[in-house]
Length: 107
Image (tube, rainbow, N blue to C red; front, side):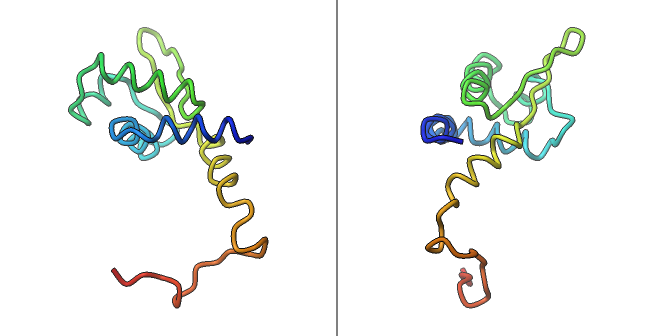
């Protein structure tokens, strides 16, 4: 992943509705979801959802598959993992980054 791709993905996720949609698709797993199921589950108007799905697809975070008369949206796990990898590539001064009990928050 390069810097422009990371910025595009982060920009797409920097909206409450799009973040909710993306998280719902992550939970749905490889089966994905139709827009109508997503709209019902998230209580979002279908036209609004369509706009957000288009933005997520443009950023490479979701894929779209035509199945008969339905569109199936799926989280693009490879792109998501690429973003996480990009963000953590140089963490911990280049060493192995592990969370230990002493660094965890007891919130």
